[in-house]
Length: 452
Image (spheres, rainbow, N blue to C red):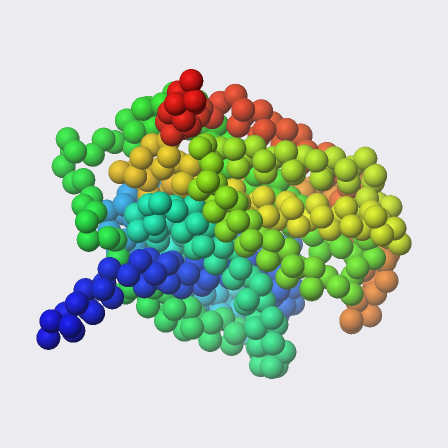
């Protein structure tokens, strides 16, 4: 009996079972939101709308991810079991609802109800699941892995980034294997699979036994009071850095497939997309684990911005996107830019909760992290939309071969090249913010004093 009790106690106290595995189950499920490009054209064709009309579903999903995280951060702070259950129900029901409205749209071509239903289910309902699911395991991970907070949060957030690489070929195979009606059937099947994964994560997720959340008004300061422990410009700097990094990442990533075609690698677009997803996940894990060894985690953001500026500048100076086809060096520079921006985009996500905890402590970290994720919401509406506007209003579309259906492929090399002028300016602004507004953490200041 004693041995059984000890084994049960050890199981309950295991940080991998109670934090890391449930975090991966949650994040590997909700991270599949980034698989939208795999099936967006199929949805548009099936319900009789243009791809640009259906694209707003993804933008709404990212917007409501950030806004639900901002407004429900306190719910996550108080009860991760409630928030993780909300995440499982909303994400799975939103996915099932999306499948229903795709089916309805197929039976009623050009139906406004089908399009609005997809916006509501994939955008709003799934968005709420995304926001609460993204936040729920983060504080728990940092509490269990206090000596390696960056590694722990990086592991979970890497799951969010790697989800696209894992799920994309599965979804592609399902679309092909399920036939003409496969698009809505796929959503029904995946809704069930992801609900099971997230529900198991919900059941396993537990904070350490020694951690007690402050409950009394006098014990726990308000979020604003916590933020005011440092100059408010410090938090504004962190929020803006985060927003800019996501905006620039989305601006380039949204055009990635067409940029690859511009440099003559259309046949390898799928492989390159998978590699870029690996860099995205690797950046989430690698940059955050690296930050654990630094006195000030803001150093990671400075490195991300410097690297992004350097590679963007090189491709701008060489006109790599415009002139890259047939030139090995320019193709290498363009691919290096895509991969490094993906890595920095991922690294920005994984480092923000630990940077916030270093500045403001663990007491209200879920709520503060949630508010900060509002930057993701606004970046989701601006990054890819601004890039699309630049491409559509500069340069010229030219024919570049045909697709599998025999339709001509239209590309705009100058337009994609011009997107880099937009991103490099923002990266420079972000670097200045990281140097001027974001103050050194207490740990960094203590280390500096110790040297003196």
